[in-house]
Image (cartoon, rainbow, N blue to C red; front, side, top):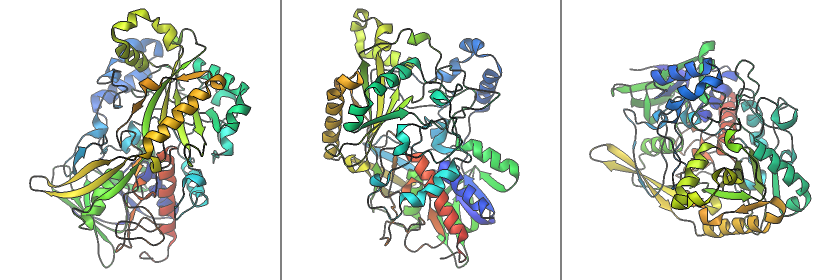
Length: 539
């Protein structure tokens, strides 16, 4: 098959959709290419049936959501969507990936990994962008633009001094509005932290409400506090870029070609030739004036290496170290097992301590959910008979944390020729000696602050994720003012390309600890906007 379009965007994940929005705002015609895997029809029908019924009837009809997901002694499992692994499935033409240490995978779903994320959004700080060829000021218009179509449940609080909201559409009522209230554990913890705000802030410990890409104001289907967030919201309140894709297609202004796996791009005299594989495995070709690649860090890296014929030439994928740290609160909260609540991140805690790191350390606070119960029970083993489980769960919280990539292990990615598969992306872990010291400094600090926070870190239960496990990776072709062989300019173009732009986290020069998706979207919007405004397609 063959087609010719004004602009072509590869990928329907958050970065791809953000770029599409910028191109449409500039009056461009856009075709989106991608495999576009979706939830199986029978599961979608089951989800819709559940959403249409009263939550009091969900106990008997929600079992399908939890299929394949359970807590264990090894921790919280890989997140699925409505009991399905469709976001991670392979498709015809997909690059084979061999992980030798890392724990990561690409997504071929419509919406990419936003079909299974936790919705946490927080911008970067300028101090965390050391060495970048673009500044926070360059990203700010993109942050604001993204929040025109992506919902945000947040509140104006002390974190806003460091991380602006970039929107005036946030509800001003307490606890982010009645449609998405905090759990009682989170409210109690926040009230307690507020009484010690001065000494905590003086020590570089700042806190506030979480910021979530959740539609907290949806009138017909508000959050019913069912506690099913980790499995998939029956009402679809957690944002996925697939939602925006559907809205764009409804306008008739965007052409979408699902079932296509892009493998390489080649510039011609007047445009770009995109080569890939169609749904039945047949070759597929498309032509465009410009091409914007937002297929996810792994796939975009493979496409660029293949297009540049850079086989056996490793590139470095930066990663933000992911870890899980359980804590016990000195004061418990009763009856958490029976409380109606959402189970996404409740609070954000940001650590600014130059003695540990010159960069922000980001902690997302989770209160009770049933996966905690299963994990704790498995960890205790025979000893669980000696513990009053409900009392323990009322005191237990979890920090899901991230470090800046400067203190994290990285991933060496090499495209190898493979006699059977054609080629293969080989991923190998590259340890960082600074990781252990940074984590030790953090856990020691949290222990010393326990008299102010009322939280005791359970350092023996700390779990360190393998590189890539948190899906906060990128930087294999980082932006540079003077790009070298495996770098890009500030519009995401590798040397030798003038009409091909990488737009996702692949081009971020480093990976700060605060959430990656929001900034990847803002930067993709910036690239799309600046490229569309250029009078010369090759400029």
